[in-house]
Image (cartoon, rainbow, N blue to C red; front, side, top):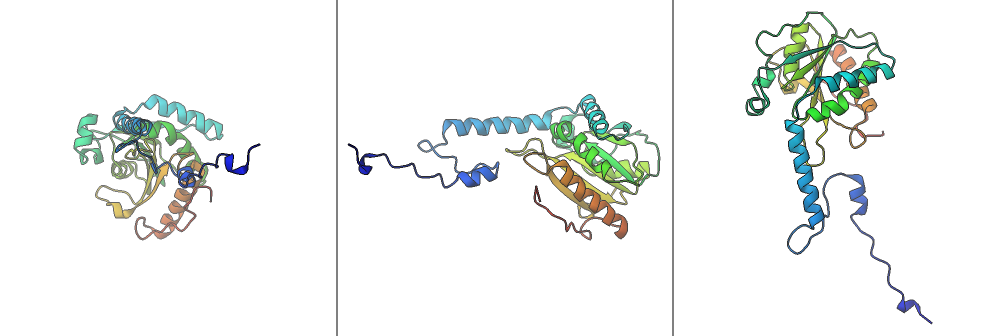
Length: 258
């Protein structure tokens, strides 16, 4: 007959389990001797490879167009014209080495001057993968929240930095620009989309004159609805104030699911 002393003791609960369940950051990885366990090392290398691939993956206009058509149709919104532009960076290698060229339109670029309230620029940035996966959903959610706004034809920008949106919007004659751009990949987020809003856009604007909503990547980051709510609210406030950037504060909820 066994006694309570003969029974195995329950394993100690993992004190890091709660934290690991709340973040995709690498915490409490353990060790094997003086190194990481093999599984954790392989996970790190796979994440690093995914980040590198996201930076170098070419932007596929066909993927973006198909995703937009599907998302807009599902939301019962009219189809959107998609105009393609290129920055002054002729290829990916130059784009990565010369950030200044990614902020300028390629010589000879012609855009129709439509005089709209808003220009929406979808830019590959440092993660075309993020654009492929999230731009259509976020663009659709944003357009649903902007009744009464005259929106210029959507612009798809190759080899683009955030500031390229200023040149695009100025050429279109738009009062504001929203740039959806693939953010710099991290080791836990190779598909994160950022949103940058600028009122009265024109070449020469600086980052302090913009507002940013980052890490749009459901289900691990901001969802499309919450990000679109925030951007739409910022646009309305920018129109009332006549400015964006440090003078315009986002006082809405900031946590996913709130």
